[in-house]
Amino acid sequence: MNKIIDAHIHLDQYKKQDLLQIIENDSSLKGLVAVSWDLNSCKINQEMAARHPKVHPAYGYHPEQLLPSDHELADLLSWMALHTDEMVAVGEVGLPYYFYRQQTIPVDPYIELLELMILKAKQWDKPLVLHAIYEHAQIVCDLLEKHSVSKAHFHWFKGDQTTVERMIQNNYYISFTPDVVYEKEIQTLVKAYPVQQIMVETDGPWSFKGPFQGKQTHPSMIHQSIEMIASLKHLPSSEVYAALYKNTVNFYNLKTN
Image 1 (tube, helix red, strand yellow):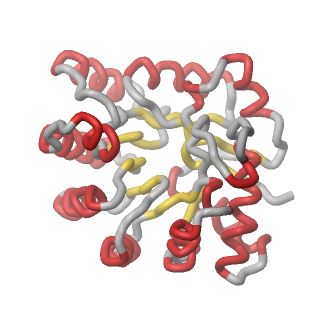
Image 2 (cartoon, one colour):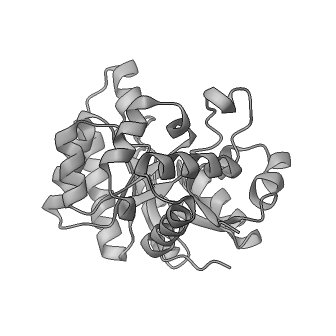
C-alpha cells in the first residue's frame, strides 16, 4: 500500500460531523499536519490530536487576517511555549498576500510578527509552516537567512524562478495541493523542484476545480497529486510515494504507523 501524509490541512475548519470521515476513511493516510489560525484554532487542533494519533498539530497565527492585539499575541505565545512538546511546527505563519491587497494595509507589522515567529521556532527547535507567495516569498527568504533558519516549509507556493532557485539552494521544502493535477503553472514548478524537497497537501477544506469540482476536499485526493508528480518527474509512482512520505516524516519528525 502506498502511504500518504497530508502535510497541510485546516482540520479545525471542517464540520464536526465530517471529521471522522476525513481522518479515518482512507487506510493509506498515515498522518495529517493540522495547521492553526489563531489561539482558539490551536486549542481545537490540540484536542483533535489528543483523540486521533494521526493528527499532528502546528501552532501559530495565520497572516490572512487582522493582526492580533498585544494581549492576544502574548496569550498565544505563552500558550505555545507551554505546548512545544506536542506541536510539530510553528504554523501557519507568514505574510498576508490576499488580505493585504483587499485591505491595503501596511505589511511591515506583519513582517515584524513573522520575524518573531521565526525566532520562536528557532528557540523551540521547530520547523516553520509558511504562507508566503510571489514577492512576499523573497521577504520571507531574507528573514530565514538573516536568522540562519533552514527548516522551512512553504505551502502551496507560487513565485518567480529566481526565488525558486534560492529556495532550492537553501533546502526549503514546498508542498503541492490537488491543483497540481490541472494547473500548468504548478506543474511547471513540480518539474523544477527536487523531489527530495517536496511534500503533498490538501489545504482542506479549500475546494478545488478540475476532477475535484464540487467535491469536499479529502486527503485521498493526494493520490492523484502524487500520480501527476510522478508523471511530470518521469519517475515510478511507487518511488515518488516513498520519497514524499519520507520527506514529510523526516521534516516534521513524525511518529507514524
